[in-house]
Image (tube, rainbow, N blue to C red; front, side, top):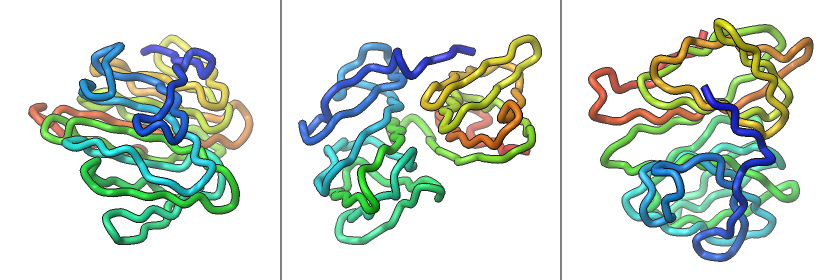
Length: 202
């Protein structure tokens, strides 16, 4: 497991120069935007505008803060709200976003669509729950303070911290340290994996 503190996330401009993104993790490490296998990042959306095109990339987006986004995906409209679930779409699509209820921060997971499966799930609660580790890579992104406990260690995540779990890591227990917690769980699985699939949380 690896703790990725919010202070260590890398800030950089959008591919189209219309906004700013905060990179949490990328593979290969240090890869350019035209060369990555997968990438997990957060973006700030303050006004209506287009998304950068990413041909050959599958994308999943969830809202971190703010009201949400009205997306126009190749002509069809989709509303993505603050406490709703993520939306998946192709980086080949023409996408325009319109924030509602003020500026929005979103979480973006992008993967090579011919090599990986990707998903983002929102979890919240007041009581502990177990999170299974997938055959691929799992990221826990904290939207509020929370504790993530494995067999030997308690990781105390502040808002926007992330924790990376790799195959072979033990399952973990989530709790809010006495309060309510909310997290986003991003999963990346190679399609060549013999057990390719996204496990459920219990």
